[in-house]
Image (cartoon, rainbow, N blue to C red):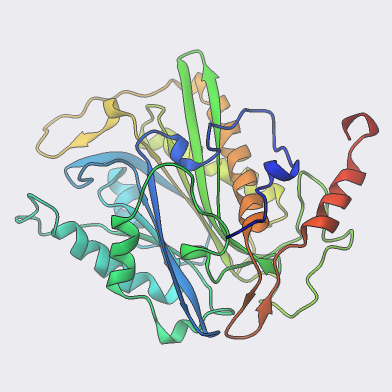
Length: 356
């Protein structure tokens, strides 16, 4: 059992907007998350994470979606069709780099096996990745179809497992053990109240900052060799129940880069930094067979609170991925978990006296 706290439980409060009840992407009603963790000895540490926007057949009832690319050194499958049509027709999968194509094949097989899919001849599986090759023997390509199907079939709402789990099993961030993290925000606009939830797969480098404090420069640095400073990537998935078009979803996805930058990333040359955003709003769904779609979205003038929510939730989700991750002895060495006691001490000393 993972006894390490989430960032907020440890006293790290990000931003000013309130989190949802679970402080997770599953605070957006209908969203489900499933993990399969794959471990074999010390050489295999990988997995897959599935994000399902709702509990219906996505091919029959698609959701508007958009993708923002911060730095495109990655193997995100399905990106061109999402950008062209502005919709998701399959769940989103996250995994390790060399597992992308096996994950996509398994996802297609799972979708085709769903009821009333007998005449389907085309699918656009969306599969994102980060390179877990330091802790995982990625050339062995251990991910199998049953791992993917298990993540899809076991996906549920409620609390989301974080840290060294699923697609985060073998990831490394800032030289420390990275992983899966999630967070959410509740916002009130002139048009109504909405939620924004974020899930990340953290596996990137930079100069670690937490709530603006340069903790790496103040002494919290990994002692062991790790992937190069600019190696790795991050996948960011954003869900909202706000009615948004693909255009405004792309704007929302772009704001996750604000949260990413606050943690100390500079979107290095070797990093693949991607954000996928979708809306679960029923009035925006695109049902197969319709010849027209209702266009319903928030006005540009009320988008700013959602932008803030995406930035804050991304930042906190990344901290959660680090706080919840546990040390892993893997393929090329051991990656330690972020040491929380000295980290929290540095953060406490950086606070103004009246905020301690």
